[in-house]
Image (cartoon, rainbow, N blue to C red; front, side, top):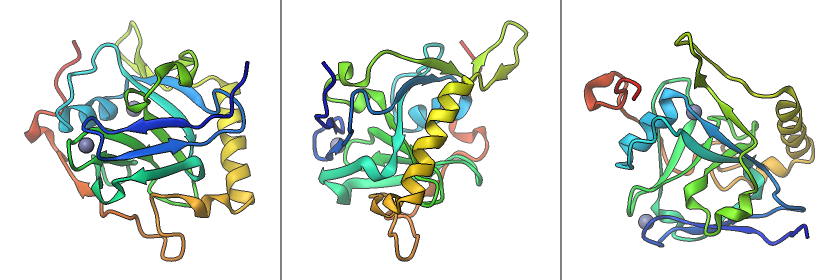
Amino acid sequence: MPTTEPIRFACACGSVRGEVSRTSSPGGTHIICHCKYCRAGELWCGQPDPDPEGVAIFQTTADRVRFTEGQDHVGAFRLTKQGPYRWYATCCKAPLFNTTSSPGVPFAGMIAARAADPSDLGPVKMHVFRTQPDGTSKAGLGIGAVAKLMTGLAAARLSGRWKNTPFFDAATRKPLATPAMVGPDDSDGLYPPRR
Ligand SMILES: [Zn+2]
Ligand SMILES: [Zn+2]
C-alpha cells in the first residue's frame, strides 16, 4: 500500500529533526555510493569506515526536505572546491544530507542512516562508483534512474519549488551555513586505501 507519509529523520542525538515529504512511496531513489568522497565525508564525521559496503543515500529533491527542530545545529562542509555541500549536525556530527552547491539544482541526498524507519526508503536500487575488477570505478547510474532524477529536478526547478530548499536562502542564494573546506589533501586521513 503506497504511503504519502513523510519520511522522518533525525541526527544521532536527536537535536536535529526533520521530514522528507513525498507524494507516493518511496518518493526517492535509495542508492549506495562507493565514491571516495562519500567515504571521506563519513570519516570526517567520525562515523565507522563505510568501506567496502558503501554509503547508503536516499536521493530526492531539496524542496521536499524540511527541518522541524534544531536547524541551528545544521552545519556544512565540502571536500573539494567543486564538490557537493555535505550537511551534518554540529551537535553530534552525524552526517545528514548532500546537496549541490547551487540552490537552482535542487538535488538532495539524505544519508540513509538518518531515516527513523529505513523501510521507508524502499530497497536499494543501485550501486554507484563501485570499484570494478580492474581497479577503476564508474558511475554505473542506470539511465532510467538518471532520467527519473533529472525529471524530478526539472519539475522542482520549473515549478519554482526549488526556492523551498532549507539549505539555501532563495533570495540571496547563499547556503544557510557556510561550508568549511576540510581535508583537501590526505592530512586528515580521510582517504585510506580501499579495504
Ligand atoms: Zn559518493
Ligand atoms: Zn545531534
